[in-house]
Length: 97
Image 1 (cartoon, helix red, strand yellow):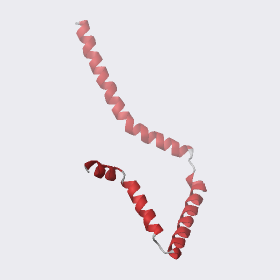
Image 2 (cartoon, helix red, strand yellow; image 1 turned 135 degrees about the vertical axis):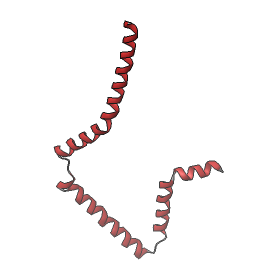
Image 3 (cartoon, rainbow, N blue to C red; image 1 turned 60 degrees about the vertical axis):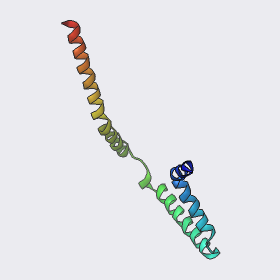
């Protein structure tokens, strides 16, 4: 029983999808058609917005993303390199003296 409950919680997105499908299947035909038309309109709007110029990447966007990634990684890389330098200094100091 415990395994079944774990499986249900791990697949929450799938469960939500299945419930939505069941809800749509139980709708009257008129409402089902209305919802399908609404979904088609939403899909067309999304495709239209993706096809527009606003959705395209420019060199400025790529540059901004690169700076954002570096701002996340650079402090950790600097700390690691500093720690390696300190360890190397102590090892060299011990070998010299």
